[in-house]
Image (cartoon, rainbow, N blue to C red; front, side, top):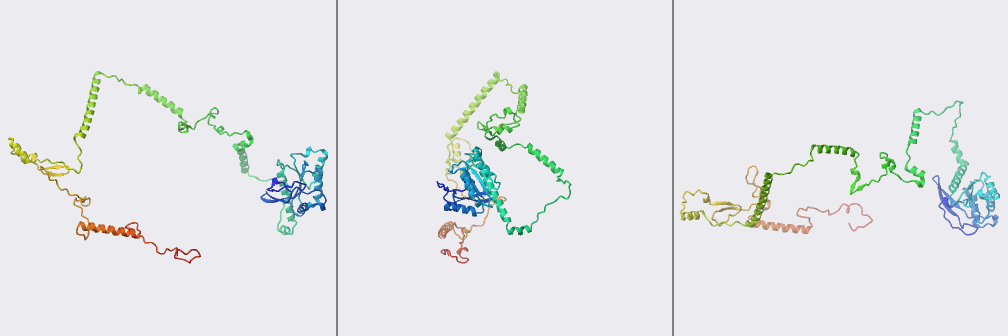
Length: 470
């Protein structure tokens, strides 16, 4: 029998003298081994032939299983049976557990302890404890007192029992014949103490001293203080005086990080700055100059002010008059040419009585004037015909200055005139567009040739899957 607090056992209880309706199986772990726990139904104190099927199954299991048997007693007698009846039942089934590990567990000591029992009943427990082969252990499943001790004792006794059983088999004799355990015997009475080098002893002493000087961890301090522990990170700020160690310092102030403005040498720098400022003040750097003006300086400043104002007025008038009196001529318009000539001017002046002899080389006799958009003869209404040249036609060799000569383009070879050339270009453009549309090309230069028989579809054996792509 085993208690449910030591394993993963869950079972149903019958409200009668027969506590359990069936076997309960559970498992627990001890020393990296899985242990099976069987909780047998309750057994009543009456003759063997009067016991029912459930009780007989429990007795049979206890008699035949190679296991450690735990017999639980209720010292508080809340189970409905007195202490004497439980001891009598234990004595009646004890012969079934011969040569098996047996433990007597007294439960519910949280309600009543053996010290609280009367002297007569205490003698019953004392008599059970006199048998050294059956240990008597106290426990409480409610407070979990002594539960793990009972489990450990049962597992250890069962391990020892299994080892003894294996040592009695024939296989062990074959193994022991091949094993030899040497036990050294003293050859004389001379003491031969272990020899430890001095360096090793020194290292051990240093390690011990270092371990003593080792600072306690916060986890160790927390375990020592318990609920009174509070985390204090500022107690290790040894460079800060103790009276200033717990001052509240803001991390951010007005959107700026305080740590960026901390300077350990701020006081020395402040003293140096104050000393420099004192030297500046003593040398008169901050002394204001005399700003008083005499009459001559006032007249000069007044005159400069008037000149400055007049200059601004002239600048503004020029800006306004240029916009008003000089309209902008578009680039595609030619200026109007006056219908005057040199001959008319000479005749008019001679008619007025002016001698115009010797004026053949005068400046006004020039027949051509250079305008912004070409050269026009004076008095002529006919505009010069300008030849429009493209960049290729007007290109020149930089070294010699001669016109650049290139080989004619391929689309101009064998074409008589410009009209036939334009017609050929239109036909070529139409044919290219038709080809691109029909063949689904990306453009005129698309030369992609698709794979007509992809390798992954036309190689290898035909599988059992789909063949609609073949």
